[in-house]
Picture 1 (cartoon, one colour):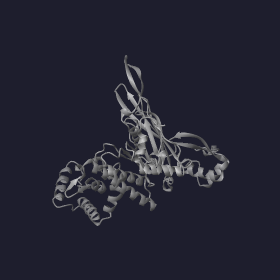
Picture 2 (cartoon, helix red, strand yellow):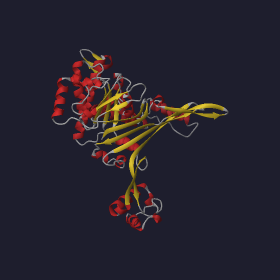
Picture 3 (cartoon, rainbow, N blue to C red):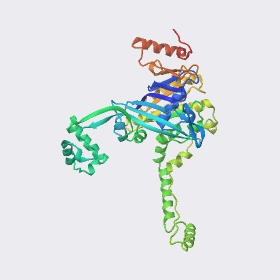
Length: 463
């Protein structure tokens, strides 16, 4: 599935702003115009992470009296992030946490993040809640708590399914009964009003199973961060998707894990290991004088994948083998988009093979940094290729006219402006104004004269 729009309220400088998202979306605008705020809000929304307290906006403090002393209680406005997901794949629809929140072939989710200030301790606590925009199902004549209160027609279905007044109330059985009512008694079924709700579906399960996750590359990222073996890093994805499956299929890996398992079993056995067996018996004899028990010397079998992930590294050999962190920033950034290209190619192949592959939204801040001019077109090509995969979306912030995609999709350009302390203003086309020959001429103009795109970065309107 793809994230097709996001609406942000009360986050950093954004009071309320909505952007539509394409496969490849470019956010442009002057410094401090809200580009990074939108990127960060998408990261919070998809990765279920928490903001800093400084990222909340505040209302007027509330003055309260405690033990005769007036103190101020800080009031934080809720951060609200709404997202619309479309292009839902068949395997995603089958997930139990997802199927119940799809309406009109799309999913609408809302995250509300709250902060509470306790003036007595001056501590601040935060919480978050996810809701889906759903229509409640209404079944006339169905009482989910008392079979006796159900209509006669529904009682027939309940008894025919082998349920009684006690076991029909379980969640699983109620769902079976509801499906039968839809099939056999459609006049008793209707949809209620639209509402935001977290009831009757596993929102956490839905997010973990199918909702896209965000992969963030900040403008000033360290290559050490990019090469960490976490799931939120580029190298972590390379490790889990490509490297570890091959390593685990290797005979040497099997030999290592089998040998360690044998060592674990030997330590637990009565024979144990020479020297350790005597030590165990000596301690057992001494402890048995206090309590009737014996000592078992054990060894926990490790999580091999985590161990391997922590020691696998990338190094560069340009005549001398060195860590990537010792290379220049330009090469480091080039390595980042090269790894992205490899991972996206793998995911595209997995999709062709009908494998379940959770989508990724790449949030790339100022990808042009440290990139040599002659590599700029290569970078644009890589990002376009990544975004063409059904498992990837690309959202960039940029100051480079070479990286925006107005020729193929003018609606993919989001222009942000912020003046005189006013919250960011979003400008984005809803429809493509270029059709037929106009679009061909526009593409030709941009291909042969890339400087045409510089017009989108002007501070003033061009008439």
